[in-house]
Image (cartoon, rainbow, N blue to C red):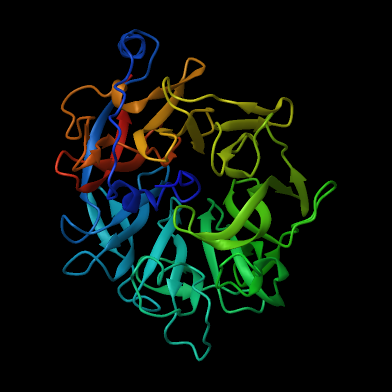
Length: 423
């Protein structure tokens, strides 16, 4: 397989990747890292299994964000067998709540949730009179629907799903909601996007990063001091209203990132101004994935390269990878500056050798699987039939240091998990 981006939607496309044949054998964590993770000075975790991500063991899905008080937002297959429909869900105290029933249509995903349990995401809107030939949210690509349908940004209080405004186009998606109810995402306008030509994309119109508050929508610029891009996505917003994401050009649908963007610039929006966060030597195509309330940003490159952190004082800094890997992506950061994400090793042919969630501790990226104490229901291993198992992603970290993500059990089935710090 090709080295898919392990980024913004916390590796949604990973589920398909793990099902593909893999010829390589995983590299086990090095003795050095095992010894270090067992030593003092490292935070360790117990693992809470939230269960299969779908209605039964062979359904796809995953968690995305965990709020400071323990709400977990995600998506889960709820059909009788592998396939449609996919519903937005919340996990609370170990139970999964289907907030996509009733929804706006058959399929939906929740990407973000705040402490009030307000969830945001994307949903098919089959009640609208509008139509589209674009597979904007990829539900057709992923096999959840047989034809393109309008896909709109939504907010849900757990009982009712309400569509958010777009910029005059049919489609959009909401990714993050902060403590004050400010939402970050992106929305389509009605201007034809010339950069879609020749990309193989079904996308026709431009899509812009936006912020929603109440009934208002605010477009964010995709041009700055040193760049001018037609398209962009906003992926996170902190409680100070600072927004991060990426700008670039139209591309074919990316099943890992779940958008039609070819990212070029990692961007911070502040006071209506777009700021390019730069790049690392010999790397390109950056996404700014998350920002904490101190203005610290994490993200990474779309394909080959390493996770980064960014501050106004230090600029962009490379974080390296877990020992033995050749790719990493920073996905989450809390106000304590704790960084989590995904690290992987791909063969020259693009096959997965290893993939694991990481936690940055003592200045280096550490395989979270080596930090688990007590009973671990997801032992880390590799099988030519199952693929990588263990805690294969770390998606978000809250103020208490709790981490959510995807785990794969020894039978190859996908679970949601929460890792809870014990020291």
